[in-house]
Image (cartoon, rainbow, N blue to C red; front, side, top):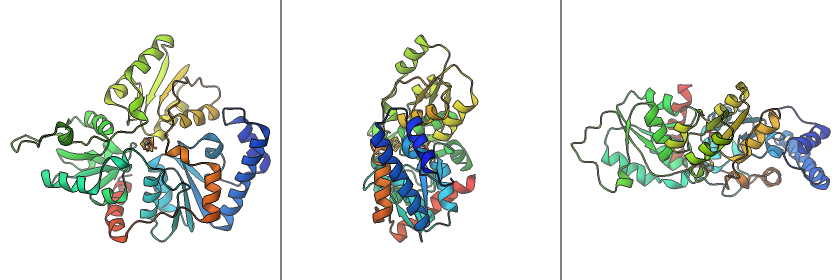
Length: 348
Ligand code: 13P
Ligand code: SF4
């Protein structure tokens, strides 16, 4: 993204943030953006911004904006010395895996994710022991030590293609229970959850076309229920309903379209439906509403991801000024995790 002038920044903050900010706050935020832009050039840094960043940040400082897959690819291609990741920790870790010699900064000390925290490397090793020879796919929403135990990673944008690329009747798919359920449906597999069922799979189970899942969930997307869709459709029957595949399979089945955050944005852009209901993190709805003011985005939610919410313009400035928080991955873990991420990227 080219450098914005102060008047362009003021215009964005006044008109794209969806709420009336007091003028003194607008001025302070504009100064913060201008200083971030200066430091970015001085430090030879690139800023990557996930689609869940709030509009005041999303439309000002990132050089590249996008979904997890898109930002993985951008991270793999950069020649900058510093990568500042305006997203959550597992995303910054993935950028580090792809750029072991560069400094990757995450503007918040923690910025976790309920999916990444829902499984450990030891859990994956135990599943491998129970299902020897079965390929392991892990969602990128995991930490590097979990990726290191897997054969290949996937994102919500390519999960079906990744599973199909394995040409294997049985697949272990971790850790998102709901994404696994949605991918199992699309790839015509039965799904089983050995941990949830609390009993080992019997040795004579015929595992043809099976998917073996885990029980982690996104704390944001699990909040959407089918009744949300039914209520909106009663009032506005011609609403286009879009759901992220981290929503439950029932919600996804009741929606008109499901896809990664980039795919959801594109679906709204390409449609001329009279109303839209977006079942995903709320800042993204604000970003779409700012980009397409003529489209009627129905406001159902105030469901913010608390982890994404930790990343602000102010924290991004501090990240550059203090070179914080540096993301590091131990070399032996990084090597194995990188293989799983690169194998995913190679799928295209
Ligand atoms: P995307 O890969 O679709 O951007 O999703 C990332 C995420 O964390 C969704 O909750
Ligand atoms: Fe993780 Fe859910 Fe937040 Fe995405 S929205 S980062 S999956 S907790």
